[in-house]
Length: 97
Ligand SMILES: Cc1cc2nc3c(=O)[nH]c(=O)nc-3n(C[C@H](O)[C@H](O)[C@H](O)COP(=O)(O)OP(=O)(O)OC[C@H]3O[C@@H](n4cnc5c(N)ncnc54)[C@H](O)[C@@H]3O)c2cc1C
View 1 (cartoon, rainbow, N blue to C red):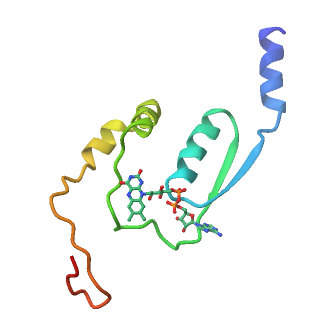
View 2: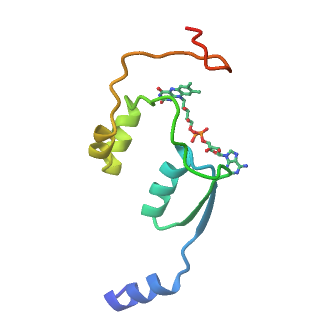
């Protein structure tokens, strides 16, 4: 195939589309890689906004390899939380453990 023919092929071939349900951890990570592989990805999420709180997630083992390959390790290091104490609360906000 000539160089010109290759460009024509790229422009006229519609990108395959993928719909991902859920923008937690797996959804956006899958969207990242599928997008990089040339898919046109849409992510839908039932929650009205991104979660602003919650339990910190450890990135280790295979996950560390993945975030390095995604190029987001510096941002994750910046967002690092140095966890020293964890408190479990009951429904009224009282300390349980
Ligand atoms: C207390 C706790 C501590 C944890 N600690 C760690 C840890 O330290 N390290 C670690 O690696 N893992 C940890 N985990 C596990 C980790 O949270 C899960 O493995 C991870 O969140 C799974 O990611 P996920 O994207 O598959 O699902 P989720 O993060 O649950 O995301 C699913 C998303 O899909 C959305 N959704 C659901 N149904 C629909 C629908 N019908 N339409 C649209 N959107 C929808 C949800 O709102 C949600 O945003 C912990 C889990 C818990 C509960």
